[in-house]
Image 1 (cartoon, one colour):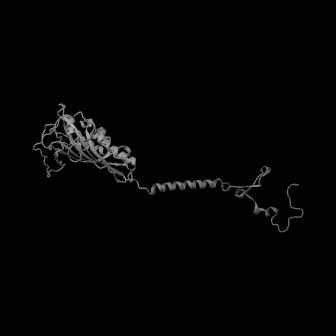
Image 2 (cartoon, helix red, strand yellow; image 1 turned 120 degrees about the vertical axis):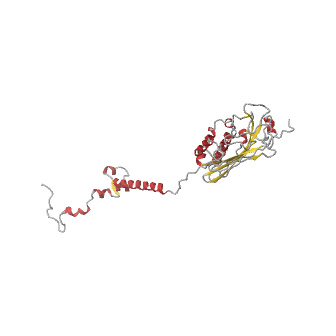
Image 3 (cartoon, one colour; image 1 turned 30 degrees about the vertical axis):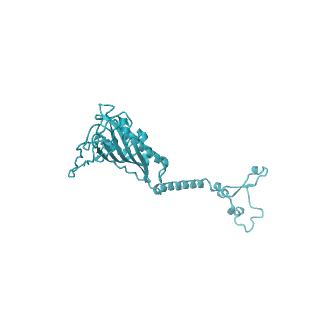
Length: 360
């Protein structure tokens, strides 16, 4: 026998092409087997106790690795497209950078009525309106902070304490008052204002923008020295929200200094010099984060001081025994082109100087 042959009876009638052709349409190829929902366990697997004859095939197993790879690539492509779309068309507007406003300042001398009173500093303070003022930084009081619509309580408190720090360093610190370094004051300013600050000290001028005394209080050490007694201070700080991006602190303080003529110290020859300073400080969110502020307005009334004194670089107190008879502000020429210097002057009201008559 060399192989399989036809049955002895021959090929049955009605069967075309032999027995193999009869089952050709139901041959199970490999793809058909992989797609089957049920898979029969092997004989070895069926020998176990309570073993099932078949098991279900997971859909991912039927789909094959290639279909999983296609789905994964498609998912990554959709995620990438969504990220690009959100990056280009996100609903949040980019905040516009805040414009830093330059300082606008005015320094107004206040001329005395008659002779400037002199005497020991303690006696002068006791007989002046500053008798009940606090001393030094204690006079710059910070109110309680409350959150605003757009700023938290801690941000409001940061604005108030930074404004206080500026006032203490610019109007109470002895080194700054006597013409010393001003770097500590400069570092508190928003960097966009520091160039204007530097110009005001390099070339001070009474033009409303570049007076050094608009930024801080200082005396010419060649003319005036401070008496050995603390500065007396009284004033207020208030805070408001100007916009969702800006806080503003308004400061209104009176500083009273006991001063003497330089190089001629004497316990009975001091006089009082009063500076009323109103300031507006502005803070954006970057300023609050970086411990900076913007000084946008400063109004200074200072006396006793001669109307003719140039107070753009230093305040120039009139000292004990000096008078301002016939003193008047210099004229302003409206026909002069270029930078305009505006001369302003006031007169100290009665009662603002120490009343020493009858005092012991």
